[in-house]
Image 1 (spheres, rainbow, N blue to C red):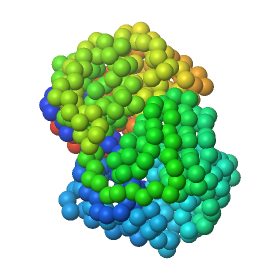
Image 2 (image 1 turned 90 degrees about the vertical axis):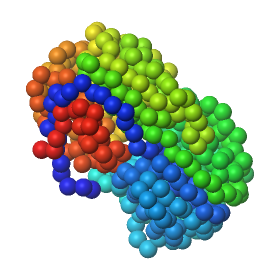
Image 3 (image 1 turned 135 degrees about the horizontal axis):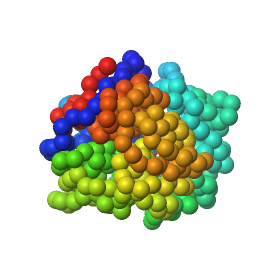
Image 4 (image 1 turned 135 degrees about the vertical axis):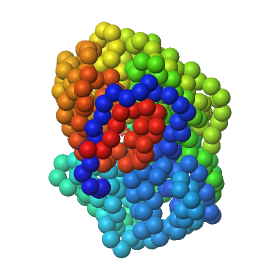
Length: 436
Ligand code: S3P
């Protein structure tokens, strides 16, 4: 983990310009993983140079995969084939990345060798039973710390068999872990979801030549398949773009253009929510980037009004609630969030962290077990604890752009996990933001 770092954020200028948002985190993780398992050499362009995705690349280097970085955001991965990973010499560090650890749990449960997956302080508090439980049903042997927490001690050499699994909670990470284990399992693995989640694993396995059947909420694959190297172009991360969509919506006089942002429909719930709130966001230059829909997003300041967030779009905006809370704080009328209990087990308890932070800045927020009601108002200055969570830190940097006084945001080093140059880009757009 990087050293302790704080931000001082305050009103800046109206936000203007054209921004290039870095590569998608979910896609970058998977691109490295599948390229490593493929036969042949794959090139990844637009790879996110974040700590999370670099941790995943490092894990594969430790598993004997040669990965070159000819230039920033590009990786050349020399795939070793599904059966070519080597036993690591030491424990495998997933850093802050839940996606890394959960997907690796599925993949490594199927290898011949033992290994240990560890994570940082935040990841070490995140639930892993949701993957180790169904993996055990497939025949995997994984020991966890008490309460199903990391580290994960994975015993290799188990013969896995496919299962038909109905996920209790919508989770792309759990679905993906089971599909990766399923690649090695005897027979078929089927995963059913209570609500469709992001389908990058399915799409990308297919791009790497796997025979996989999938539709929203369902995926099925047969074990014993090989993967064929392919080149991947990673789209810009909608979740990172989200902070600028909200910022430009709430700062008077703003107009931003975010270039070629990934618009996979399982990611764009915030776009729906912001539009319901009255945001002025226009999509231009639609294209397909590595099989994913992308477009430029032009966002202009607009008066927002509170909404009841439709429960059915919650999984499609699961990472965007911290930003939504800030939009809600600046709207007219309350915003009600329900059905979002998963936010309590992200990099921090995001319902608690956002509610506490907005209260510190003078607002009323009524928290419930699975959501909150946000009562808007003029934000004041204050000291915010980001709980070492990248999305909480960036959200309060946005909030500060409309606050009446300076906001000090503590412990922001983790922004580097998903959006390394957020502060630089934000300043160039007009944010008042500096390191303390
Ligand atoms: C992710 C899935 C989501 C999301 C996370 C990335 C992925 O988690 O919150 O940031 O890449 O599959 P869950 O699947 O646990 O909801």
